[in-house]
Length: 436
Image 1 (spheres, rainbow, N blue to C red):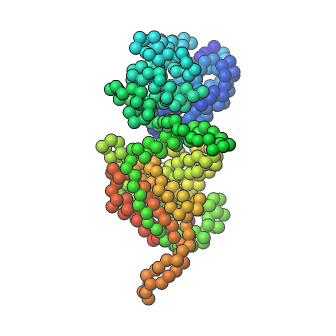
Image 2: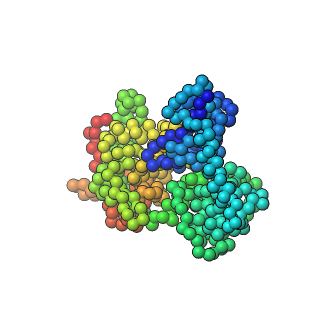
């Protein structure tokens, strides 16, 4: 018999690790080729990992809630008939590696400087206890840290997130000595500060699901990272409304899908970025990364109330039909839970359509590490003063508010205001003879 390592596959640009949600197969069970063996999660997308070989699962190298790096083995299969493949490993190799890792953990656990012991109701892994001891965190402080792992366990990510804000949270008063700088993670877990909520009678307590925790952490981090400011303009969408009404039926018959206002607005954003490239940037400390591609994120509300932001890549190279098809494809797969990790990576600026819910305008939170996000309100008929050769007249027009939230660290009011105004200009100057 041969032993085969199953490797955590690459899941898109900039995705370097995944968290195991649950094992579909248990030790001793047979696994067919391409059969799902484990469920994983990246920043916002849950995925299933299929087996690259057929055989019996004989070893899990990780458990639920563990983080696995891309390219790292996560399980071992035993194949029938001694099949030799390039990925065949010596039977003892994975166990030997695991033994070495366990030895390191045992060393940390038995180190005399480790003050945290599992002598209470809450379990702490050797790694968490080692981190706590290294940072001078005693048991009474550790017990205040919210755990997001299975059964409320404190994970490495919980410790990293806590250490990043330690000194500003109530728990920090427990220990105030000088500490080392904490490592960083791509996505911090939300910090839980106990709140005394009065019993109003008949209240139901529901824990956030994993995606809501990630959204909570990401939005809170964004507000604490960027100096948010918002500018507003109002755009006359009458030409676009009339044009869309004239082409939508034929477009649906020919392409088999709808043409909405979203791709038209995204096209205008891409044009405006070309005019104001410093809105299409990211900030890394004191460095500004100016992106050549205009990758526009499209915030989409899911049926469960959560939010996800698929990205239309290289929008500047797409025409209106191409953008429309990309928007419809991403929206459909988002609602069906079929997005791939790469679909939500690499955004450089974001658009959110709050008008979908009948809202006039919004002040959205920047999607880090971007520096700008635009919200589009509902399109409503209203009386508007128009200037004509014969003088001012009042006419009924289709109007929409645009709002741009931007990072005042690198985007000043002039740039932010000019950009959102330019988007409105492109919308108002839309060519009614456009053929799709």
